[in-house]
Image: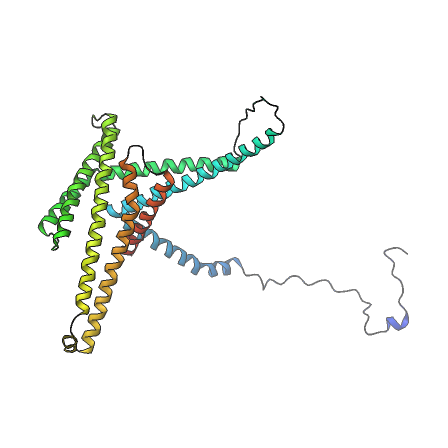
Length: 334
């Protein structure tokens, strides 16, 4: 029997209502109702596109407000410089670990095949992925150095700001004697720090006739004056903490009779205002303490001509200070 022939059905099956001897109908074309048109899809995406563009515009405008101020620009560049230095150090460490592992594997294999007195000379190369990663690490380190150079250039006019700072401090010094002495000392050491850094930077670029030895000494001494500033700032913070705790203790010792003279609403408003002011003070205190603690080892590192720590530690500590500063700038310009 050929494929085109059909076997006859028995009579009882042919007459059965369960069997349809007619040709089956062709399948129905797929319905287009379940697939939205391009216009409908675009209408659905319009709210999301609008929301995305709005958030993007808000973020860019916020970042522009930060970069439009000298402090905000320096804070952003500081975070960029230290974070890229840290990332490049981690990448370099990863690639060096890969090379060390390959060398150790090659040495272990050669130890079983070399005869006594034979020497193996081999040239190792990184896989393509690791080689590309190593190039990115070198590029990030170059970017960190470039951003650091830009920051130093922008600080060439720092003496003008220090002059203004000293003038304002002289006109309205802190009432506490210790804080007043610390403020005067900070103006003094920052003046020398900025002068020496400017001279070393301009000498490095051939603008002033400072020898290489003079430049190295100027870099080191400018960092030492910066270290003095950090030490004084830590002293200022702990003095402010002492005065704050003393003030809080004095306020808590107010007699009940004095408080009872005030109405309930006035007392609640006063407590709320004091709580907000205290929270603002301690937030600023903790933030400035963290920044100074992060910068203190770096000032000692740059104060020594041979250095103290590696690029990884410099990048990590600088990134901590950079993140803290950038978060505060982001909050202020919100």
